[in-house]
Length: 403
Image (cartoon, rainbow, N blue to C red; front, side, top):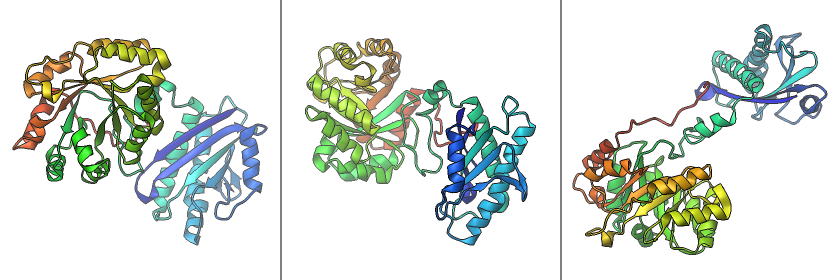
């Protein structure tokens, strides 16, 4: 038996984080238990879990400090409230019948315990570490999380300690504000005046990147630290290089032209996924968008499918052309056949009355440029488009302790 559990409980300096293993004495967890007791390292001395001096918990648990203990107060915290909390949590789990199906003399637990050097409140240390240990034990025994929970939560989640969120597009529809601008003061104005909203995406347009370089994304991030930023490179060659360049400056998505050789598109998508950013294929002037997506699927299955496709009408053609929406549902059908999801955006001369039609046609993202960025009242213009999305804002910056 080798079970793994994890839990984070509490907040502030006393926040508790427990990583836990449960297993047989004669298995890998038992080996880790024995090694931990005999192979000591300075500042990380493991200790047995005792409810009080001379009273071990059952099953036995080894507590391993994650943070180097550098002064007496830290040692007191780990040998005091943390040790008591973890041990009592194991004992209470035993009383509640959690280990009924096991021989508690033949299994052991190993718990890595985090205590911040800034922690002061012993009462909170005890309560948070107790709760985290109980939760980690139950999760280990339940083999939590199951794959379905991971797939549901991975794009909704934000790490509680990281201090910022990396936004993901899990709750369409979205408004993408395209900044095809060459005036940095206007870029800053747009970034400051567009309302804070989980359904807003910012695009560093091709003219903006050509004028200021990819470093403009870092400048945008300083003004809107948590926003989702698309870099519209319209890559035609060196796909892997340009995708990584966007990731390196903090972009969330990069755009490759659908007119590029399929080999370039494929390497771009693979590199973007490797870097943890979205790959967007811009279908501007692509005669058969669905055929391109189907070709990528046949070449490499889900691994070569982009997360995002943009059905794009060029600015120079807005005066007379029709919106290029005919392939939206066909593209999504190809994705579904390959057990994948593809967001589809529509761009090119979008105005407020058109938004509902675009969404009805299957669009997940509505890309709007000058109707917002050239407006005298940017805030109200953006709010008018957001109202048409008719989608409730959801705060993604949350820490889930139970499901």
